[in-house]
Image (cartoon, rainbow, N blue to C red; front, side, top):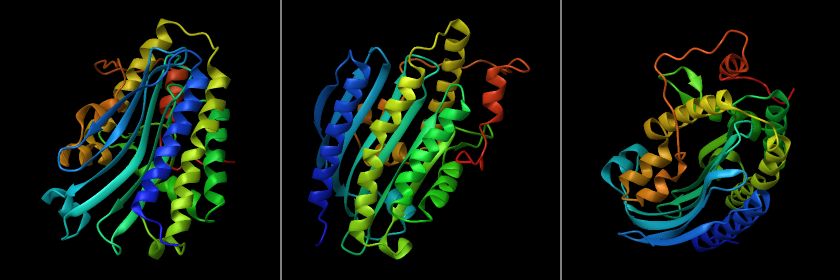
Length: 300
């Protein structure tokens, strides 16, 4: 069966519905506000934002399906001559209130120029304000579980990809503890069918709610004070730096005349920057910084 772009977009919309429902149940207070939008040039989407919740200070679960003409810079970066594109996906960023609860990001997406040039991308990565070993191991095991269901090399390959992608070069540190990330996935690169890759992207999207629910429930009732909130603000600042300087999805959205509110929904409500900050020796903050590096095997 030929998987059409319409079927992919419809399924991704369903996954958006499932995730917003799951996050509302997790928070127990706030509900998502939805804004429907249309893109000048073709297509549109559903932006869903939750704010001021019991757990979720600010979060977005966005769906888009857009089409039109590729700008020259994007054509060059993709190495293509054609310009009529279609792109659809679901993107999520959650910033929690409690500093012991981690920031989480997910993206599943599909891009198409024609029957020969089309691919899937996406991933899930975790950015704890404080890296906790048990949580990191649980998160990576969940990612490995869903990857192993589809290909024996997916987890190792996509973890390495995430380590390299979510790296703040000017800080020489990773954004968080990584996760899995992939781009331009095709049958030729994987040995899987197009439908197999699509099913993997859907299964990855559907592992988001059980994974984050467990992490939230482990940490939601932990006490915190001014020190932890200040540290949370600094870690959010690093998050902002990565998204504005390096994130390819942000660049793609801006360069294809995307909706600015939806593109920048990944930014926290508040973030801090301190001049030449150094954590106390032996502190949890120092330990977290020591773990923001590539090639840590969290599934041991």
